[in-house]
Image (cartoon, rainbow, N blue to C red; front, side, top):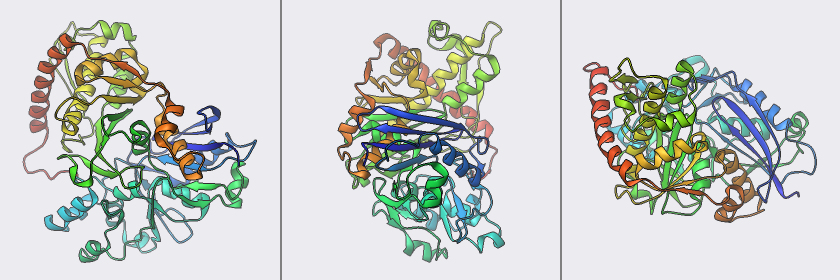
Length: 480
């Protein structure tokens, strides 16, 4: 057995695979751009599998790896008994079937949400099933997350890791078991759900057919894996309960280890940790980095030094980034983006600076829910961590020290960590984190800018709430 593993990160825009040594060295890597599912609502599951197999073929060869682990965006794929997808898969933004799920009644929905550790209806396997037409629904053999679908097609085994299971709304997260009793009471039994496994468990072996297609050895142990944000957070946190993790990408996924499952703050999602017996509170914020990228695509790229030169408050310009609704911690489906206070002298730098501030204000609201004391530092990774200007801006707006990961791609590295643990190459997550990520760079907030941003954040919240009230028609039902 070689001292390296294969890790896969399935994002909305691309699939990345890498061969990673136990010392943290990247031995080979391959990126495949995706053409299906870019909006986060639906995707072609067969096409996704082809992309993953192509990425795996790009990192095969040489000594046999110890294990394979996949992290992927959340969503749902319904399959028949031959593991063929029944229609398009639902992505993280898919809300089909939510209205039918809500029609089960307030009492049932509240029980499902509490058991699943969810503060609001946002889709998932139950909603996906209820939104299907009768004919394909009658042929459903199992409902799987995108990652679990890939594992099934590579190994022939049906399973769901405990974190992906939490997103179905059919799991009792605290017990890490399916909520079969309540599902039966709601008339949803039998629901075709696979057995649950811990994210670090070996759940199958690569089939001969998959091995021949990818160049990887048949019989290669495959680890359960987990959702991309949760896997990245798991690596950033390790076993530390005195830090908040932020994986900053299209949306910011933030979380902290909890003392116990009953200590989840209001508005936060409760998830099993990648560590057995531990729990994480937090959630995805909705569009943050994605909103900045959208504005950049419209007005053009502005160098960081020009953005850093714009004073706090962006010369009076305010951006609200929630183009597709807000999630943690407010869970408002009607939230929409806006630009407020615009004057003729505002340029592209002002607009992009205001969008970056808005992303940080959004994250600040979630951070304050997870840690009202404001004392915990933030371990930051993801795309936004690459910019020294953004790191400085975030430290000042969050009013917390930032611990910047030297390696921003923590989802891919987090999948490797799960493979190391599952294969037995190393079972100490904190030691693995030190080798894969290294020593973080600390950025402390500036007291004067913190004071200025405290006032600006309060004003931003007022404008956001007022705009939300105007953009949601009276009596409109929430989307989740």
